[in-house]
Image (cartoon, rainbow, N blue to C red; front, side):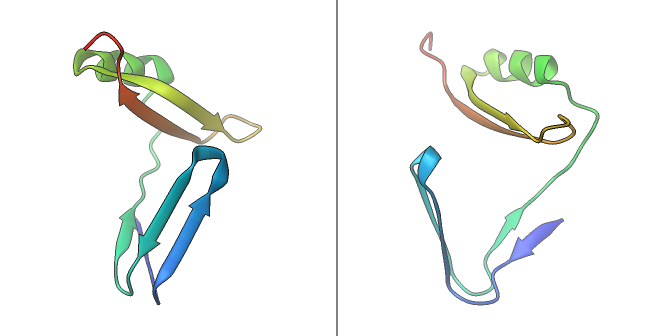
Amino acid sequence: MRLVAGRDTELVIEDLQLDLKFGKGEYILLAVSTKFTREMITEDLAEVGLGVSGWYTDSAQRYAVLIATPSAHT
């Protein structure tokens, strides 16, 4: 699934200090999967030198957004 910008769009997420700009027709790929657990993803990221710097879920913990950043040990 993907979201496609119908016009030039700017999205600001202040809590993450993130400013995203999309031109008309540009898109973001979205994926929803239940085959991954936090533990599995954390281990996979560690193998390539990344760590979980943010993990955000809905109140029922059915969905999550993960922010991965370079590990301090790389």
